[in-house]
Length: 396
Ligand code: ADP
Ligand code: MG
Picture 1: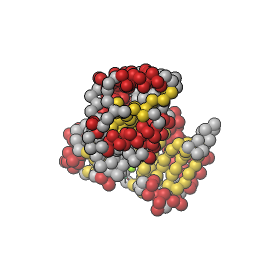
Picture 2: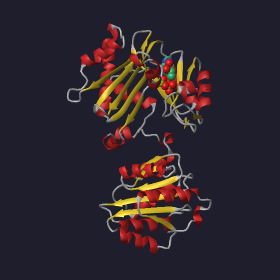
Picture 3: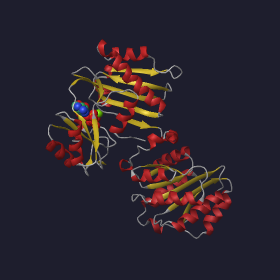
Picture 4: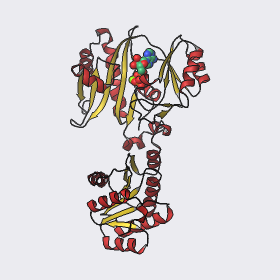
């Protein structure tokens, strides 16, 4: 789960990371009011969307007066901000953050990620801040400092000092840099984050180290033990299909193709997507309905898949190990009676009680296209999607 910049700043500041003064606003008037309340004479108005690259896309504006704050906000509220990270559809702006403008001396890139190779939290930093890390690794790869943290001992101060030294932080600010690194590391670990990024972390004209931007992503599977983080979820920033699935306890990732997939087990779902591609099609989604594929779950999955208007065929691929094919078949039949499915449906069942399952599908009288192997299922899905009148395709 992603959170907003202002939320990540608050989280990190609770762990000792220094941030500029700032306040959240839900309207242009409120933004101006909160800036007056904060004091100062220069403010930055920042669109709160779950994406980076806002500066270049007009989502970060420097303002000197009340009027400028209001008009910057009017350009933002209710609009979609399109950055290189949002995709062409953009993300809606419903909140802005007003922050004290800070005199910047140096911009540093600082990131914490999970390094799967070493199975450790890795700190990635560069003295070439202000650019995206992808750009830094292309243009200034030698400037990148990497350091992995041994989980049994945690981030030690000497290790943090070493990073500060490699970034060329002046000696008087080493302690502040160590506090920043320790704060990010603790927040990452304590809250089950998968990513913390501060870009830029700045050294100010008045010799402070401040996080001017902040991004955090959390492990969805650990959210149950962090209710205070779950509360920060903002559904307006999520793919509506994925949000609906998460609310129903299904693992769903929306994709661009047109063959909807209903599968049990993440590995089988991945294999199904691969096979569809191999057969010349494009999957519309990844959907794992999990172990117990009850009729209700199957119906929920159909509803979800059919809510994607790009879907032109649905492939149900179930391998029944603990499950039973006859139950699943009943689920499919029930779902097709309950949910309006006006595209061809291809079903491949394998495993326990497969013959029973096939009989139930055959007896239902529904125009279900059946398949025995995964390849056959994928080929029939692609054929059904490609045919001009897919609904006329004979059930086999
Ligand atoms: P994004 O990464 O989405 O473009 P940032 O929060 O990093 O958004 O802002 C873009 C740029 O705006 C920063 O690199 C920094 O140069 C400038 N900036 C952001 N916040 C402030 C601030 N409080 N004071 C001064 N400059 C800022
Ligand atoms: Mg940034």
